[in-house]
Length: 105
Image (cartoon, rainbow, N blue to C red; front, side, top):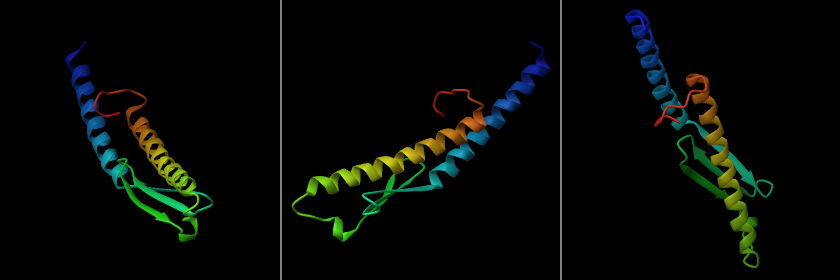
């Protein structure tokens, strides 16, 4: 490989690495909200897969059916995290052009 080609490749790799780091910061700052039970339970997560908020409508609290409330919380949290994961993967794929680099994906 010609030395100039190698230099160009290294510059492109460094730019891709900077872009990926910036994208990871942007993704971490994004929030994703999901709900379950017709909005009775809402969960909010950040792009770095941290659940930041859970809101439960008081009418969803039925002492006779705690399992339903638990299921709604799990569903809302999982949906918020799924949305965050999809957005992160989409953003990183756009930068990386589909390349898989260990530690970044």
